[in-house]
Length: 597
Image 1 (cartoon, rainbow, N blue to C red):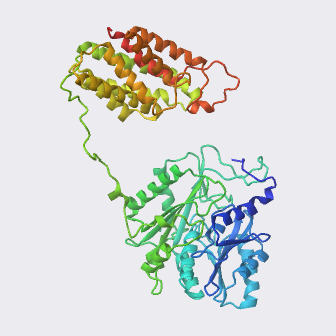
Image 2 (tube, rainbow, N blue to C red; image 1 turned 180 degrees about the vertical axis):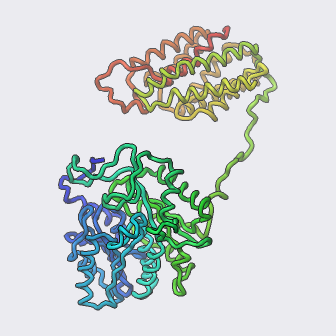
Image 3 (cartoon, rainbow, N blue to C red; image 1 turned 90 degrees about the vertical axis):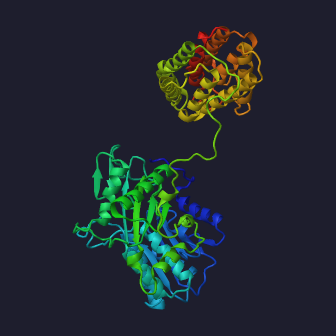
């Protein structure tokens, strides 16, 4: 997508972003010209950790600044490394007598500029006070191709930064913090896949940025629009894609890879990184599939799971799977328990908001999935009334079947109208309910000639089989109608058209307590309200059905005032398709002409 929300001056995009961070966290300050975010409450007795890189990867790296993670971050322009002078300024702003470690991404620009800055600072303070750690977690690029430049940095730097930051916060010296970071980095592996590359704000929308075809995905991309190692021409399902991606991490037979050192029983951390353009529902669905494949294929139950945007690439529709082998990273000084504690230690960094989702020890979600739930017992669905209303069985079946078939026959029209004025689901919602009614009829659920039982069977279908707004509206209306009707029957009165009219009127009155929609608003109420009013006044079902038909047709002349149809461009329209919900309800009502009162 080449559209963006930008300030008048595109050059202010990054500075404005950094100032926005200050609004969220009083412990942050900004060197405005240098684009350096730093912790204004840092402790100069503790090791200073500085990172940075091009902007567009938020929350990396400015969002990782805060006690427990980074001391400072030097930001460049979008996808452009910060210069060495600004990196030096980051060190000056957070100079520590305990020394400084630069945690950097293994890309050319960052290597060069952080290298320049570190050499200048080494000349001032010595090699024992200035260290540089490159995070190299990408497994997509093979050993041969990556021999000169090494493995790229993906989302693994978030875990490295968190652990090193917590170690510094606990007061470990520079050698210890550097050692734990090095050991963690050596035991991290990441792989990603994406639906497309990204457009950089301020660049021409016509500029080629590696856009993929509509049916393509790419595996092994970089975080600055760098091409991946493989394109797949048909987008696979998650269940097909995830095993393929994990094979890049676990396949020890591949001489080009085999980067991840794992043995059965090792404790592993899973980080699922959203690079900015994956919807949350897709993100969590993918996360589930990753965890499912890890368990079923590799016997791994992650000891910690993190999910969300950590190292992004603007709004890239890309995700990264990162695995960290805690067992293999553990040493005598930083054992397994301590590494987990470092992950779990609190931080005030804006971008580590997911830390409280850590799982204490190995866990599986499965013992927290309730597959069958009853809760407290509900009242019986079949009538328990001492008095009942009997209906001739053949007539009852005919009414039920006719109403359902009316809806099914009309579904294509209702769906077509709803795609023009709504979200297109009305026809299928009604059809689903109608098919469920026919199934119930075949099962004999309506046998016995009981009006009350028939109403309750229909109520259960509305509740269980029909979703959306229409399903809720029909349920409230029908439930209130049935409650009132049953109350009247229990009172021992002689049931006639007046009984039904009073109960229907109660149904509409109750429904009006839960929706602002009224007659004239182009909704289902444009049929329900006049139908009930006509029947209440006349006690004649044929008259009321005729009014319902006229009311449904009349919705062609009504502009929408409520619901999703309100947002459809209608300025030039005076005639519309009929309201799909209103017409669907009319098709149900039409079957009531078979009743003789």
